[in-house]
Image (tube, rainbow, N blue to C red; front, side):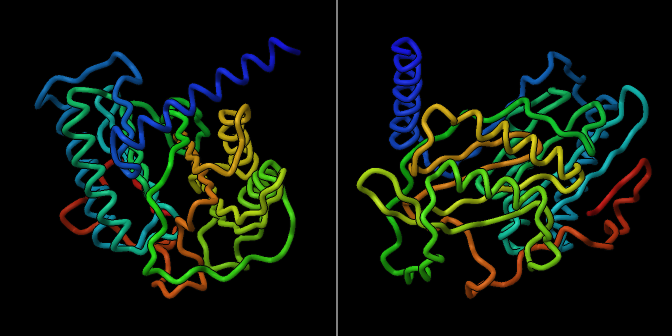
Length: 297
């Protein structure tokens, strides 16, 4: 038991060091990139590189010209085929989704040259590509570092959000309900996209009583069970030190965020345009023909 407590204490200390580094080392909303998923590299200006540029351009154009919060597309054949997708956080407006994907595309081009597989997580979106089929699959690796950090002070000019229902929960219970609601809830009753949930709960523990803001989302091309499995894995990554500190966990198929510091998402009752839908029948612009295959969800 003593050994177990010592290990947990050391893990929490490591996370605290990460927190301090992220606080002073770089902005909280900076990108997280993984370019070394495989050792495979493409030849500059070769067939794979040309297909990759086409896929990334297609993803960016669709994000800029439609209201799709999720989109996947493949182009090319056999060893030169490229599979790409993006996912915007469910509370983002179409303009913010478009901006996030455009910036993510620039980053992945600049930071991951000659890599046949890469992923970038931004504060509001995920962009990834690979030389293998990554659609409709639940994947937990690669992942961004477990992030437990101090967000900026709340904006004094922003009015405080209305209080949530008075239901006393500890953080673990909130995350359990958040996961179940995201994976198995009836999203047709809400204006939010499928597999996207936000919550505001009163949490109690020790001498504190706080409001915990939490958010979970999965890519909509996987099943409810796989969404649940992915979010459980995200929770497991911070299970040693669950608290109300601002926390973010990014996996390829899902994301988890929670904090008691400030409300970091837009609710459906906020004065904000509706979020980009995930069900969309738009086709790519005429200049981007779907030669190999595409799917807008």
